[in-house]
Length: 420
Picture (tube, rainbow, N blue to C red):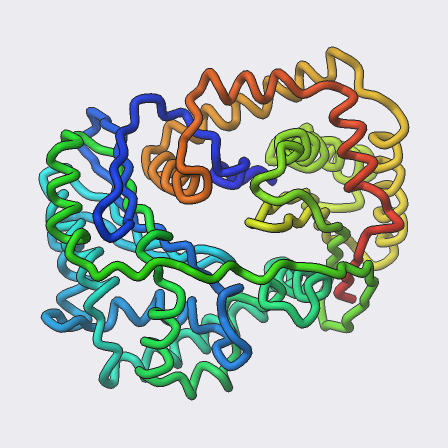
């Protein structure tokens, strides 16, 4: 399944962006758009993989807690600040990032940027609101557990990254969550919210000079806190197969392998291969095979998630118990086809055109563009334009696809997780 800003994170349809680094190390990047709606976000290179053992769930909890009160605002005033002008503000946590973002009329740029700064750097983490939010997150955890098609992805990464921070689920667990204190929160922020690992990104109808001025006003005065320590690398992957008994109507399964990190040039060929196997198009190879030809599965998808030092490639499907082995056999056969037979030139050309078209369509959403641009700048300190994206895709050869298939689609190196 193609996720726009996961396409290596260095690809986006922005050409004329402007950037600057504040004195404290926070980088800013802006793309001018004539739309009446602006988008702004702060991306912090800190996520659940940066948690220590006793901090499981902390990154996600902070994402919630920053909305519960600052030195000058109560929770209601934070929520109303953007709602009152018809705008939206939200946040999300991933394994490696925490992002606060907002969409608004361009007349409200300063309002948006001031609020993002306030909740990020001035939250108090006090009061009944914080205690109540722990219970809200516990309900989120319980809700997640009721959805096996979602839960299995977290359990799969825990299987392949066993006893490592990257394998921990983002939400955490109720036991750890309930004992988090203000001191614990502030300790995590100090250790992981580094100014030289923050990017303030924007797409909207505002001059770069004005954006820079506002950024300096609301973010430039933050005390510098540069990162000095690198993340520990993921090592010692051992393929494993595991079956978990669950009371589900379907058998849910993920088959996958470790893959290329965000900085590996082969990630582009794997992205194309991933899209061909089980991307969002109804004509993906596995969808045609398992759903259309045999009727074994309603939903099947492939996913490629690159992280800073490693990646994950996986196939997910849900099927009736009696069709499970048949699905696995067909998927394995499809893997072997890619590994042993080169694609035809026409097939490759069609796949390239499909991938590029999907990226182009996703770029019509300026909120997507803002987030993708920010993540690219975070990782690579640059953003590729449309011409460069096309060049990278067009440079992929049939030999590249076969080489990647042989490295990633080796069934003997695959792990498997099954809910039955």
